[in-house]
Image 1 (tube, rainbow, N blue to C red):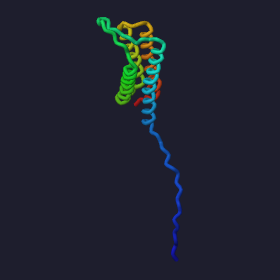
Image 2: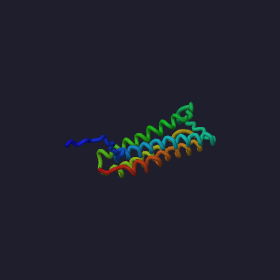
Image 3: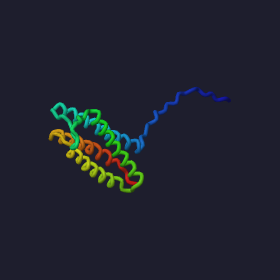
Amino acid sequence: MTATTSPIAVRTRPATRTVSATTRRRRQRALGVGGAVVANSLLYLAGRAAGTDFTLTDPGATQSHQLILPEIAAFSLVFALLGWGSLALLERFTRHARTVWSALAGVVLLASFVPVFIEQATVDTRVMLCVLHAVVAAALLPMLRRQAGDR
């Protein structure tokens, strides 16, 4: 007696993708960085449309410099990535990454206002630059801090 086998199609469920906590954390942080850049770019464009000139002059210089959209986006990106990188380093080397990073971020935000008031600029330019600085912090603090893990 021989048994015959017939080819039966075996139905399997498609593999479910599980996303690791690290991947979720990176996505959240990338969204924070991207949100900071996009928000600042849109605020810059709104400020320009409202008549803000974004012209700065060093106290000892005679020539002024007008900030342009690529500069705003690039500075936002660089400092947002520095915030992300500093948090990642703190998470690797300290047990209190959230606390240390939050304090560091607050100090950096306050220090970022100093050049705004050293440069010669119109009041509306200074106000808009302060708002732009605060927007980066607003985008990064919740998104980066919330996902920061203590060792």
